[in-house]
Length: 200
Image (tube, rainbow, N blue to C red):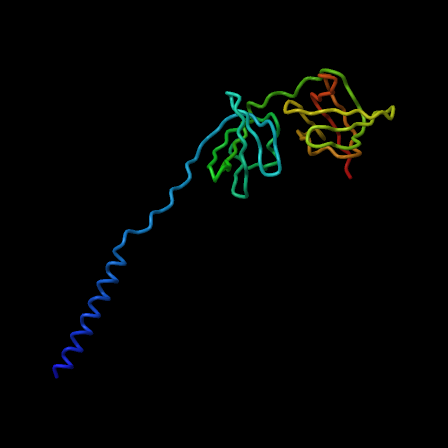
């Protein structure tokens, strides 16, 4: 009988210890919720675009590289637009978060009413056909006299194809274009490149 009581007492202590362990485990402080990234806003003008990023120059002449992802929203007058509507020279207001060493855009608002008018026709005029593009800043044009001319572009260059704003990546071999350019440091720098682009 004593042996039975001792065994029961031992089982009771074991159960009590397990319950205390369970309570102490469940009473531990909950894991802290990771802090949400802080949203920052930047205003400026687009000076360059890429496949998944664009660069904004702020009013104090700082350049901010912003990356986009499938969750990024693009708006103009509260209406949804596309990433391809982001053009060089367009003023924008961008809210973004920091992920690692990248600035990821949440919402990109295009400020349409502040878009500068098209650059007036100035400088020397060159007409011809695109032979090829070189890197990110040169286009080779063949004139009517079968002469090949290299023209450089910079962030101030504007593009108008089929009466719509365009960009450097729209240039392709065989396209007929007109370029207004200036000569600086013995190089031709395009002010404006106008098409219609010939369809493939």
